[in-house]
Amino acid sequence: MFREMNNIGIGSLGIVCIISIFMGAVVTIQTATNIESSWIPKYLVGYTARQTIVLEFSSTMIGLILAGKVGSSIAAELGNMRISEQIDALEIMGINSASYLILPKIVAAMVTFPLLMFFSMFLGIGGAWVIGEATGLVFTADFQYGLLYDFDPFSVTYATIKMFFFSFAISSIPAYQGYYVTGGSIGVGKAGTRAVVNSQIAILILNYGLTQLLLMS
Image (cartoon, rainbow, N blue to C red; front, side, top):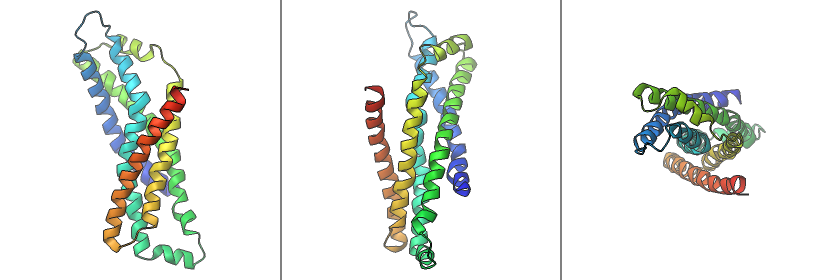
């Protein structure tokens, strides 16, 4: 399990950090440059960056990115083990291959992906603040005021709940596709594609359902 946490969790930290920083910067630039009226306060930039990153980007968008990176990796790994008969060898030795190979991946994803989400929130907001101060589009005092303005702590809870569900989908769907792959190496490639597409569709459906359940109930 710790090996899987390193592979699919820590191994994804780099891409999550890069995307989060630049996305925060882009949100700041787009929001600030579209505020044309002097009646609209500058702290709206910080407020918009917080809402965008906390509510949607660091959970759903990062989940979709992880589905592409981690999902294809899981499907390919298990698919290669299936066609090379490594899974059959485990079962001959009396080992529950599904529990031994799949369960650590699911647990590792559900532990590490929410942590990646928190890193994404921190770096995304940090990138938004740095680019706003560096370009002079919004000053630190205004940005911080908008960051704290009308903050609801449940937003973080909502994002965390979503990420737990996304983590299960990202790890279990590709694992299923890879575990039951057929057709040799060509089948492994098709399983990887199905794993990414199906897990991303599942994330979008879960995002809609959980948003309606948690925010509209």
